[in-house]
Image 1 (cartoon, rainbow, N blue to C red):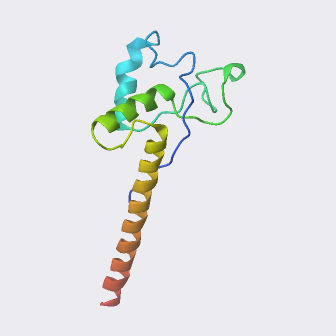
Image 2 (cartoon, one colour):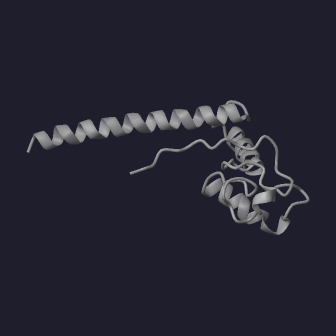
Image 3 (cartoon, rainbow, N blue to C red):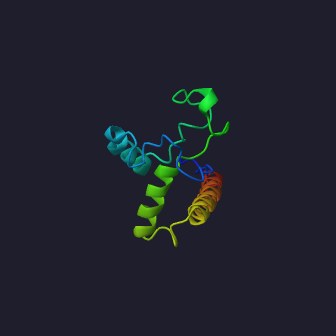
Length: 120
């Protein structure tokens, strides 16, 4: 069974140590690009309970989506025609749309199973 997508509020700007910055940790960028496009939006290492950044240097206590990764995702998805505009608002609307479609599919599948089970 597929799981519903969750929307994680992104950082407003890239954090000072974002690996997606041009002067960031360029050696890990290919891995992070692959992960962002294949596995989903990573949590910014400067937020939440990540061990990467010491607590006193955290920007947010709650998890936030990595701004650098989200920027990449938005541009690619817009270029491929999956987002009307390359914005966070369109990203969230697409997540909501996909979740609504999945919910409808789950309901239809449950009804079909119930009908088929009644025929036995």
